[in-house]
Length: 592
Image (cartoon, rainbow, N blue to C red; front, top):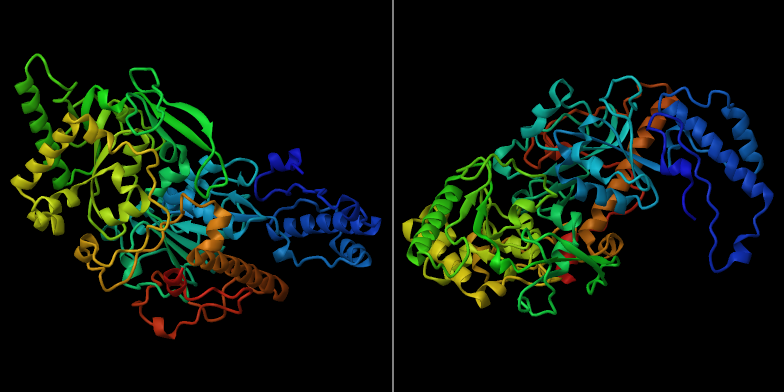
């Protein structure tokens, strides 16, 4: 049954929680309705006791008019033993964020929902940032703001989602306000940056290893930097941000203009190619209906290409200059009767090489600046194994053709390789393999050839239409690295096995993914274990009158939980497990 109005708009975390009383009616209605009055009274009494115990656990003064001892006696009379105060909060999982741990919030919130399908998630603190976009008042709620130590802030959070130290400055004097062993039960690492820009040995101090590492790169995974017996490693490329945020923009695309993508396309009017949507049934494994997105003919958009960046890497700047020069030359040669509109219009919309106005970088969910362009330059800042950011998704969501440089094998495990121009593949197929293997080998010839190739595609309607695929997602089960894949060998992965499945999988709903992906099941199981262990520590501290920090006896606060950290071989982290972890993931995935 739908939840009550009280649950739809719950009180902030730290206040008295709403009581959620439900009556379930199913096929065997007559059987389920044979409940004794004693059972009903027991449920209500237990709920009231839990609320009172929760109030004491969270440090509030609510429900002081209830007597827990009398409630316990009443509950016992009806055959229902009350919970301990530390475990009274059974319907919520409380999340805090620090060091911009919200960057990959779609992945982290999805994982928490998979691990705790029957619990509500409560986002607390001022560090929640963009994650607040997921607050729906049904499964995800907004808790109190502020920071640990503020009046009314909860004494403990269940999970803290932490970003790397390069973002720690954003929290100011509240940096590292959450610590496992002080005011948090467990923590997750959420990384949306390449490994070279942060210090993986300088996390905030905790007395236990991260339960899960959500990393947009696979470098530390292949180097086995984190022991899987302590930390579950999920490859969560930042590009998944778009796939989760607006799946219809990738799975059901239609393009107007002479059946460009081989479907019964419909033209959407409007010079700026405004989005049009209709509901269509998904043909994949998804259980939800996917929104269909349609654009007017991208081939006749007014401008050739766009480039938007605030990180002015040399390879980005060099190719932008080459493409702009090649476009200007083509426009000059065509004179007053060009065959293509705006062939000389190559615009830099960001702070790097700005050529047009004072346009600010848009929100990640806004793709309007690219709706007028046929191509978008999408170069990663570095080539690191598994590192695929939002750039490809931004261009594809706008209906443009991306020109991509980076780990193209990883990109092809997230997006359909037929939907973008693969720079390294073009170089390799045209006798410029040295540049594909190492960017330092790319010179005038390589960049000029690439610019010419973009213009050639632009001059052929048939060649351009091949990139306008209906489904821009990677094919299912395309995640295994090919034995003789040149890009994989170039990255030194020929002896390291396959890539992981990208998480989350855009072709699987959360429940199916949990059952079909052993590594996801491992991460979810570990999160349940760490929550139970953390709450058990606090309960023990409350019962024995010890300091309420939940620390294990003899535990040490550390900043690095890597395999190469000092004293790692002497560490023993996990306590008695509530559920057995499904090991080993590699063998299970390879067999599958």
